[in-house]
Image 1 (cartoon, one colour):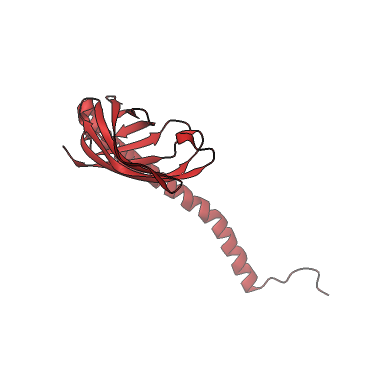
Image 2 (cartoon, rainbow, N blue to C red):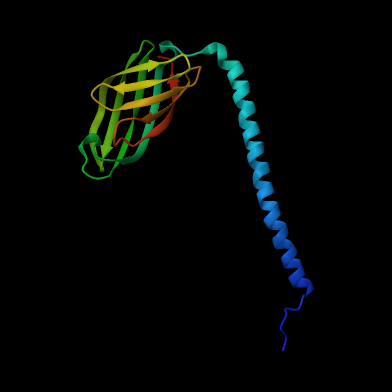
Length: 173
């Protein structure tokens, strides 16, 4: 009867491989994180040097920006009593002076509740390219604008609203 395990070449090889993987995986993960952080930092530094002189103004947002979003609307947004699927599509038209319009089609729970409706909007834009967008009588958003005004990242800020998105300018008119 054998009381101790017999060491074989196969057992030694598996044990060595496990030890190597236990040591190598954290090192590889750390190296990947350092590389990613370094690349992100280098892009941030180069972007900040390029864009420092180009802050944003209300005029940065001028023209037509297409949007389409889908998600879940939560109470109390839009009068829903339970989480409900929501879809929207349309375009923002910014005038370059803090005003504009949205043309939107909106579906809630599979039913079209707005169809090509045009509603006024207002927006603010700080020199650091952050700001707000408010649809008059509708939702509000925090916005983050590219310094050249070509793209807007937004997140709904009213309770229950469902979306975050990035929209792109398709026309300067």
